[in-house]
Length: 100
Picture 1 (cartoon, rainbow, N blue to C red):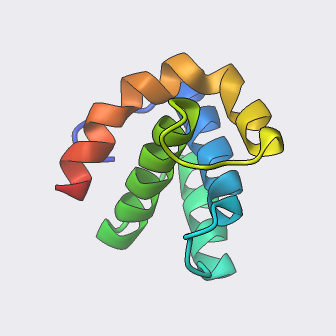
Picture 2: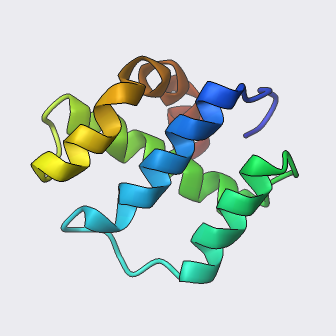
């Protein structure tokens, strides 16, 4: 993500948000290659492309909305996201800045 150094807890929260992204009813079929690429780059601290940054921002925004009960998500998805609530809340302003 632009001009923000991700901590280990940030990366874990983003990876979780990316993992559950396909579970939302509206989510288009994301190319598995793109999800794998983003996961690899995050864990190896490599720079993301603009498209990959956008995918991260969408996943954080969806996780934020799901945790606030503003986006329908299964209990399984919410259970996966809950441990990262505070980190997702912290990352959300950065995600919104990318999406705008």
